[in-house]
Length: 443
Image (cartoon, rainbow, N blue to C red; front, side, top):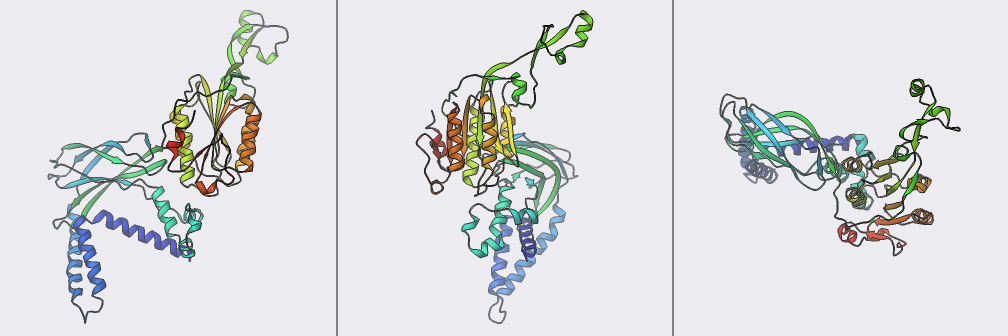
């Protein structure tokens, strides 16, 4: 039964997409009038509406049949940016060349995203935020879940851009724009060149494959001037060890052997040239290392609060100057993941790209994140923690960080009705839709 519902949803989506691409505004008027006439004229013995339906349906049939004569012959090349920002439109350039033998007039260009329809497995497993509040029928049929999956997998509906008349062999450059609905990868299939038929009811299409991807970074909020407190900590092995596992150290040069130096530090090539033991010298370093902890453990899935929490984390990544310190980003994504920026490590845009792909984890995964952070707290100078709620595990985690002498800033992003008990006064509470005003209170 579920598979039949899934197939029905796919067919409905295909029909909607077909009509959306093929019908002009005038064509939609005729199509709507034909559908209304068909509904009214079911009883042909009482009304003549069926004749109106037959006439309008014939018009549409002729228009659709004629569209094959209006498919333009063109080639296109576009220049996509690597990054965009969720919720903000971006522009890019497209070069169109007329390869036909006649002047191309009345054409338009529109972007074609990849098919956003989810697979059966994705549709069955996914849960729309707030789905538990819907009635039994809506939860069982999954139509709203289907629509939610399609919307989150595709940008806002692109607008077509009219193309000025092009002589044979001529080229024209124009600007198109897209607006990512959410963070993540925006996958594009190619471009569509449209041209209306003589009646102005339907469009002829020329699909030009041009796969492309734009990474939509999380939206970012303006933060007040923040001075991260915390003293410089001893980092055994320097920056190298700060982002690796083992006993690697920061190499600074060669020197003569001293009694007690381990044999594994002997530089044999230099020893052979100098005919005396030469060893490699390493240096440990002291520098600030800050942790940005993103709580991804949510029973509500990727709802508005989760997206706002990712945006808050992205705002800190964007605002913190990592030229003289390290910034560790930690979250759970199947396992505890750590990414480090600053002092020759990842750049800010790479950290934002990581956040663009963050997904919600199971409700009980926070304890794994807590153990991983507490295990390395001795090397940290301060901690910024972005939480999705306030309960006993999260309270104990914050208290353990503060007890170790770290400077801790705690932000909780959650709906007002999801905070019970309420966090203490030193915790900044941010509600979806009011995040920017809440961040302005940070000091």
